[in-house]
Length: 247
Image 1: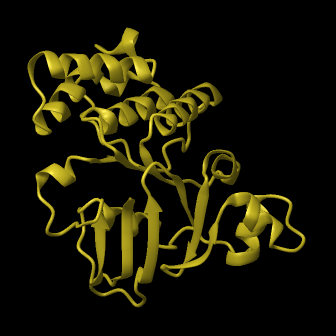
Image 2: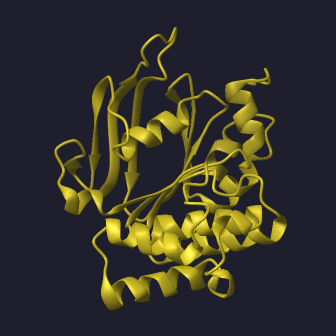
């Protein structure tokens, strides 16, 4: 089954001189670990915002598990999880209180909610610090708590927008181990990162986008082999998107 499909997806923001998406076509199979890669301004965050229902496209369509996203009911939307680039937690609440809050938004309660909180805390190695306010945590711990909040309802399609940005080596390793475990459990993941060695190591397929459209798509090894002079995914990325700075 196709977990996510976009067709001719376009998005132009009011007042913008250029569209953010210019006909984005993607098809991600159920269970894939899929990398959505591109330089700053390529359209990655806009695409994820549309895929998760946070924004509406100017035109085009998105389907999730063969159902149109805009027409889908709560059952389909509850299968989607999002770990945003920014820390989306209440800073004065503890990690546990944040997970309780987000769990209740998804309809969890009682013993089921307690069980899910315990599982998520264990998964991101925050059980011992679960009752500390988020604002007192290190950057890496906040990133792991952010991941736990995206997992609380047990999504089967998970979007991760730069989940390891700015973290220490230990937290980064812990997050990547968690993602590999989720992938092995069959969770479909769509992953954005500027750490291309992560994508090369983790993703079965990647799409490199720029200007709001796909430039190339395939398994990292295949893309490297078909791009002359490139020995890694970073080389392919720079070959396709150029070396001009994107501040």
